[in-house]
Amino acid sequence: MNRNGEISSGFAFGGPFEQKKLLEQEGIIFDESGKINLNKYLWNPCEFQ
Image (cartoon, rainbow, N blue to C red; front, side):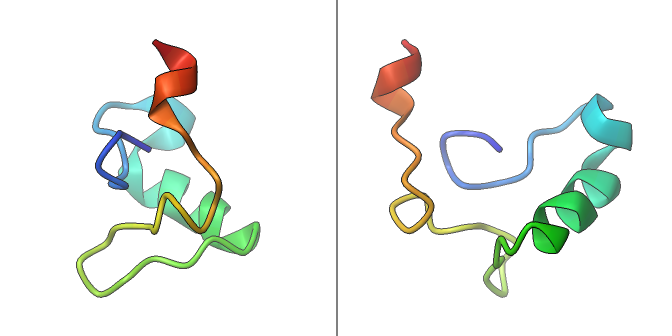
């Protein structure tokens, strides 16, 4: 995931479609635009700077 709540581009985890499938299997919910609510899933980008 990137800082905008979108699946990161590239080939990590088999590409974006595979990454989304794996996250959904873990219970992550994507909105209609394909983003996740970063606040809901407690991800803080400031922790990784």
